[in-house]
Image (cartoon, rainbow, N blue to C red; front, side, top):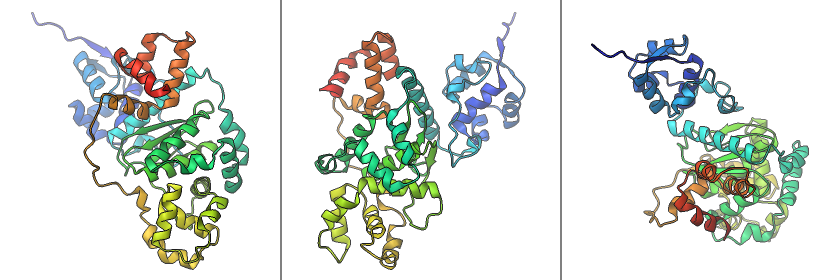
Length: 384
């Protein structure tokens, strides 16, 4: 007597959501992974299908969703795709799976942080939001609110160190900042706005100068109350998108304020590649940002800027590096990667909630995603 095959009815809306949040518009690829036809998959996503347990397990594996999630009646509200301003139809997006996973991870961290912060509104964004119609004034107010000093700007030895300084300043006012890896062609960086836990994701594959500019460009979107995904960052002064113009100008003015630019320029009247590079190294930004700021403040004419503009069209700091020197791992490498992927702010809030007896030790391990053996070392890296 042959055994009966166990079947189960699943929600078509959940299956469609699970596919869209990992494969986007690549429905044929999803069907191939599931070893079914595209017609079968479309039927599954339309008419609550009856599937076998082995098919359910394959769905869980290929969609990278727990079986319990796939058995829900409706997609979880907290994990609906973000409504990116420049991506009106997320369901048709053509991204690499690592990009979809980065978005999913960002949402999970943001949702957990909202819980850990007990829904307390972010006062920094609320206080500076009132200046969001003037990029110059906003940059000035943000510099004041973050208490950015000359030491903050100039004590680092390189852009990698400076990026850490900028990230810590922003995380100090409640902005979650993650560094995740996904194709640069998909996105330079993105934001998911929330009144409690606004979040910025930087692309770890980008250069350090690129990430620095992206950090403040995306902060501009956060202050404007926007969830956005930037596939490119265009510094061309003729750029027509008003929101991008605003965020570019805001970021450039925070990173290279006029008064400090005046001091550093001094008596220079003939700008060339050498002194521009020196200024860029001083401010830990790209040469494109320096040229743009010189043009903004009339140190050079529009005609002069146009003569060198073609060399800036690729925005050199956003060009992917040649492979770096082979990285030598040590016993803390895994923890440093965890901090970048989860953020110091998030991990700190997890520890705070545990110390206040609001979550269990098991929750700590689950939220951070590490084994108990690493907890003490992680705390030392974070707080010592």
